[in-house]
Image (cartoon, rainbow, N blue to C red; front, top):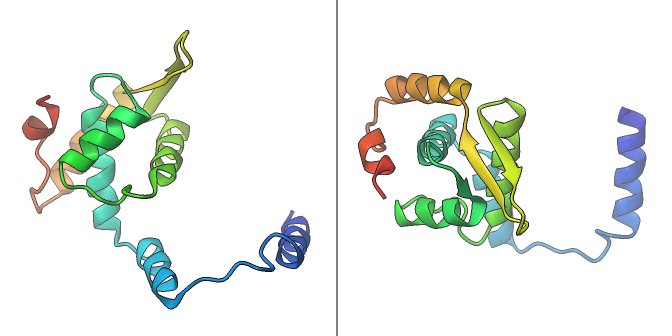
Length: 135
């Protein structure tokens, strides 16, 4: 597997990424996001789980997170869907497609328990369940 990935990377460097250039500002921003402290990720995960006590689309979730001051997904909504996919793989949330083609997400019982644990371990208190559940 590792060999295949290495060959894919070399191939992409010769074609796809050949002309791709990043400014220093962009490099710093990417490194900043990659090296984001776990606590921030825990707070974002907690916010997402709390908001999904009622089913929502990714679009609705993006707006609610933005309205609560969480700007991690601003100009990068795709990373929210990556995070939702990860939470779904961990069985913390579930999803389904409706007839119109919209995908809805909702927290599972396992996700509720995990959210309670995160809530207790988050000492900063910047995100409270009451404030996030009000719509």
